[in-house]
Image (tube, rainbow over all chains, first blue to last red; front, side, top):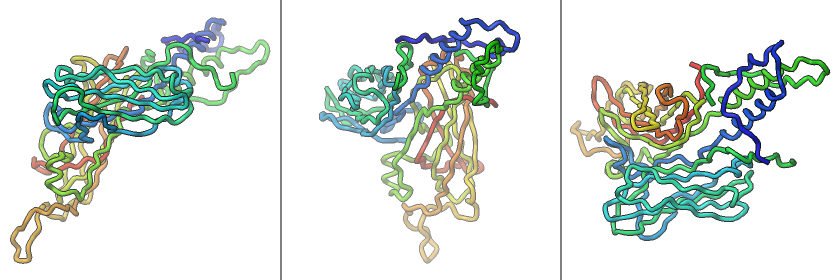
Length: 187
Length: 213
């Protein structure tokens, strides 16, 4: 059942003694609670994985993952997805640094109790340098939530022969729950 | 959620609804609202959790290659990431753990920048002094028995560990809809008056939440 969400605030003073409190005020509080509930989103992965060259000045190299013609796993870890978060999609985003005439594909593979899904933003080209490209993950297709899920980040050069194509940064983040807030387990 | 200036640092938990006939419910609903706002604000989140796989005993030439250290007098990028920030958040924190390799007391400068658009940015600077550094030479060389300076010594036993924090007020970011923000952490270290100090970050964490300062 869809539950209404109210993106506004009501002053607690509005409810002070002697004020007229109507039934719609109580409904508004419920909608406000739903709104807050839907916005407690987690960022599961927030990483910079760059080799170098990602800052306007100089910078610290980090994971230094570079792409070659074979799809390789660069990160393999677990994340916890709550039951409410399982009802909302996640966003996987990656920024790459790609040489001219090369393209790179960054994929995110999620494995949960309901199966496995792999998503990838559109391939990164040289013209996309400095831009984050994202892909949506339908979380509910792989998990009911309340469990650890395996996350694999995969990197592959699709075209070209450059050896220094790299991921600069990546994130895996839950989206807002804007509709269909989940019912409790025993509801 | 446009909470404006209403910040809730504490809340009275408990306080059940009194289901007594003719009870004035207004105060109870007000308390529910207060708890609700508290709930909205008190959930600081991680923006970035970064490690660098750096070994302080790493060989100097490997450090030069992999660039996991820096020694300049201008800001060097340490971490950068993106995250969607809810409008009720008004603060970012970054904590950096790093080694500062020298015998001198040094100042570590950190800068945290957030951008949620083409131009809207804010930044902050802090300095800290690595402790217990005095009394040592900063010479990064093996001294031969005859007193002459020998080859550069890769293993640097006089490294000091320091953990520093930088805060950033999000006031300059559009409060109505920060949305997707890009957060950048930079830093450098100097020892007086202005000499570059080698810094080896091995962990950086960035958090977002509500501050009452």
